[in-house]
Length: 98
Picture: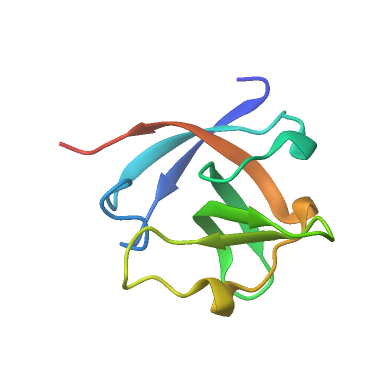
C-alpha cells in the first residue's frame, strides 16, 4: 500500500491503548511539520530500535518528546528528544488481537 505499512506492536509499553500483538496501520507519507501532541508514532530510536510511542511535546528546537502509555514503559527522559527524521510514520489505526 503506497504511503502505508502494517507494523506489529510487541511489548507492553503502550497498554492499554495498544495491547501486545496488535497490528498498527502506519501512515508513512505525511507532513512531519504537522505533528501534534497525543499522536502515536513509529520511531527508529538510536538506542531502543523501532518503538511506538505517544508524542507529548515539540520543543522550541523542533525536537519531539514522546512517552509510552504504560507506567512500565521507559520514561520520556530515558527516550530523550527525538529528531523528526527518526519518525517513520504516524499510527492511524490499531488492529487489536482477540
